[in-house]
Image (cartoon, rainbow, N blue to C red; front, side):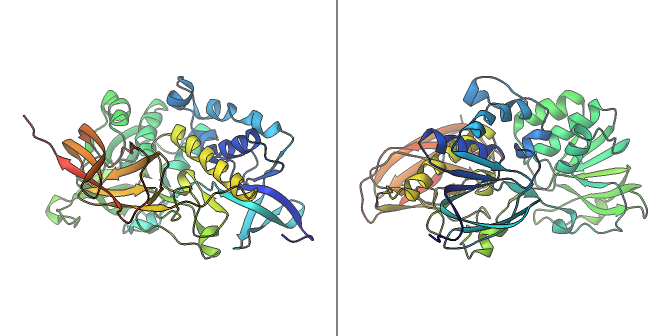
Length: 418
């Protein structure tokens, strides 16, 4: 470590739910110095604008709003070992774990014993999906609408179409309806909903908002302001069917077309990304390809529940602290490979001799299927489900595995439907 710059045992980048949980667990485990860097002016991340409930059911056995969930983790910031810096934009990190950031007082560089990336994710925009048309006012991402309505108290329009059935879009369909906005419909290009089924029931069906699958926006109408959208059904390859084109009058288009893990800093440092998740490629202990740099939360892969984000961040913090203190023990790594209907698994490797919990998503919806985790001719774990969907992350406990050359394979088995 350089003697000329300030040194911290652990640097946490991001003070959203992952960053707060990581800092709190590091302090509990006896960290001597933890620096938390947050680009916004207050900690909490995206949860500060999520005024709906449903957070914390697993962790606290209570249905909390986003701000209420954040409040449960703020006491950790008062620990003497933890330093929080808000309005601090991290500009770069190096393979030597030097973090450079800018705040209101200037440019700073610190040396970290270990780093936890808790950078969250960002929304896909109109440019990412290539919808034709002019660039009129009235086109928003779902997260922007959420902030405008819930935090800024701004009415975004009177008649809205939502493209994409992600959870934020579904929740905002309900929120806009409660604010007096007519939500004409939700359009989804995929043949299935990309959000949780409970959100379809609670946010669309309960408010009589139609959901049209295999349908997308093919043109945005209007010059100065949105006047409507042209929608069309798509074929099995996702190509719009011109004969199904219809115009839907509206003054607002809300895009809920996916989330992307935020990893620009990590890529700038030469880190390796996982093409299946767009997050960092991590080992069994959540360490990335850069030694001493760990990743967790939605910056690693997009989660369904914030409770899962917090748990994962705490595990990353424990492992990062062990690395910083020179206590990280070497272990044999066993690869984990997804196949036969499984889109991806995390982690991509497990540590021999340690129990683990595999997180995975399936590639397509299905009914009466079993997740099979096998190694060689032996079955390590089984988990059966009546219904599976890509929107729901599965958690499969796997018992400790002995070291060896065989990989773990995770696949789907179709069970008999009576």
